[in-house]
Image (cartoon, rainbow, N blue to C red; front, side, top):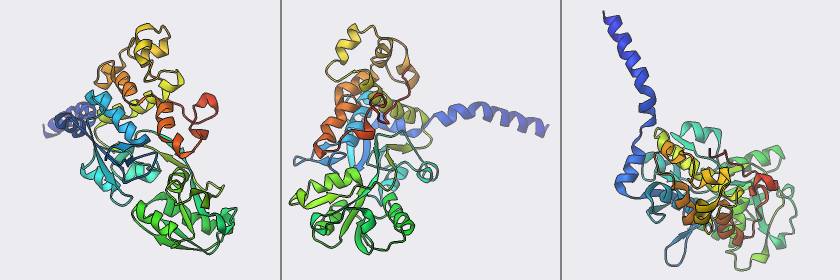
Amino acid sequence: MMRIRLAAVLAAAALLAPSLAWAGTTLDSIKQRGALRCGVNTGLLGFSAPDAQGKWHGLDVDFCRAVAAALLGDPNKVQFVPTNTQNRFTALQSGEVDILSRNTTWTASRDSTLGAVFAGTIFYDGQGFMVKKSANVKSATQLNGATICVQPGTTTELNLSDYFRTKKMNFRPVVVNELQQVEQAFFSGRCDVFTTDISGLAATRLKAPNKDDYVILPEAISKEPLGPLVRRGDWEYFTIVKWVLAGLIEAEEYGVTSANVDKLKAESKDPPIQRLVGASGDIGKGLGLDNDWLVRALKAVGNYGEMYQRNIGPIGIARGINAQWRDGGLMYAPPIR
């Protein structure tokens, strides 16, 4: 009799498991709070940085506003929480933030051991090196014995060691936690080289007293797919975040912008566009939202191309591998259908 009862309990648990796994507290907390808590960089131009009035700007910032628009109906219902390379994952794990959107590289260990999951790639990058132009260094292979500034707790730190070991070269690390302090150390001459993602080097170069005094070396020594993370367990929330990102990318592919989304919703007969703008299909229902979820996101921040041009364009980084797949890039979203 006990075996029969145990079997019945296990069977009931198995039936309930899918719904329990689907449910989570993050989505409920966001709705009850009325705001999305977004972990961002402390100040990286193009990705997340506050202006003189304290308003946040950047690609990662815009993505959080898009999620807030889709989920809460208002892109301004976001609380931005600055995080550094040392506390960013703890902030997500502890519930201090609901999403980490701050130039973080998608790796196997981070996706499997932090209690978090990546929702996709928002920017494809690679690690590089920046030096003073006067050093007359043309290649990373000439950096043997250099003093190199690097932030701790990053893939950058690990890649640096791998690269120099592979090339049988030596270097002297200068490990500094905060980005602004790393930049100051580099510009003051405390280190010969600054290494981080190439996009970050380009942003830092703009802060130099004279940007033409510095050059970014041609090598990219790693793959750095950067993307937003959320905690594991609330799969409904994860699915919303994942499809907001996919929707912004696919909207660019089909020419749906912040300026024309209302017109296309009213007039377009193109099936993919109709699905994007919620004029047909029932994608919103599946996400637990209404059919205007992506329309709100697009009106708030534009499609991926608009976000890129507004935030990354001023840094001087061409689209390159971040172009749409039809244009030879890697930006390819699963279809909204």
